[in-house]
Image (cartoon, rainbow, N blue to C red; front, side):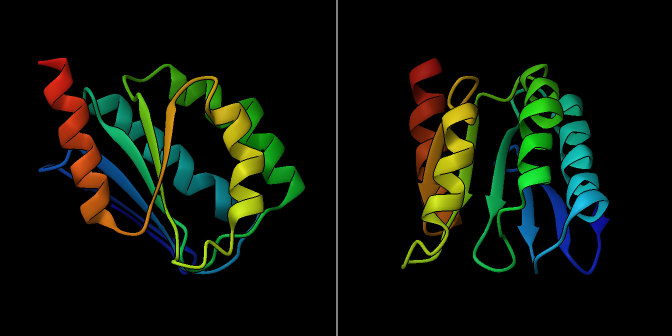
Length: 132
């Protein structure tokens, strides 16, 4: 999996998710490379959903936000991913930053905000049971 001082990217086979865990603020390639790696995981695993743990280290950067819209979204939309989850802190301290991105994300994906991985699992179970 992907490891850096800024971010870890892991594949959870049980949940069929790629989990991007932000550790501290970063920009440019330090921000973009983990996301490109996450896309590769989504391509390799049919039905893999995207989860970003934003509780530490996630901040908005205008250039990187534009990159999300111009590069990440089109590439992620080519995968079988249908849902994007943001794990947020209880105070939702990133509400404004995430809402700015979510407007565009919602054009391609169902977007959910959760306080932990347990809620992500619950929502995935509901989604997958509807598909059966």
